[in-house]
Image (cartoon, rainbow, N blue to C red; front, side):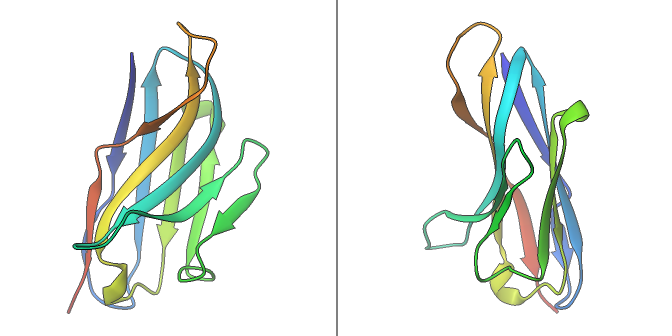
Length: 121
């Protein structure tokens, strides 16, 4: 089995910073892309940022210049450093990792459990 565990969410004031982490563990053969999505109340889930196995990154326009995605391949972990946070960044943040388990030749997308980020004074 494969497990994704997120951490790092919480309450922060506008202009503050938070760092999210998501570690994949279990029967993992190989990891491809890793990313972060978010879903605010009443809205659809949207891509925040992702990073390929080669290190190429992609960001939503709304977070460019404020958020940084990175990965530690040795630890099967993806990070999201969030700075200059705004109230509109409030959402549940989900990690998404495309990986191949040891027991199948196919890649699939796996989701973390979600972590709440609230930006408020």
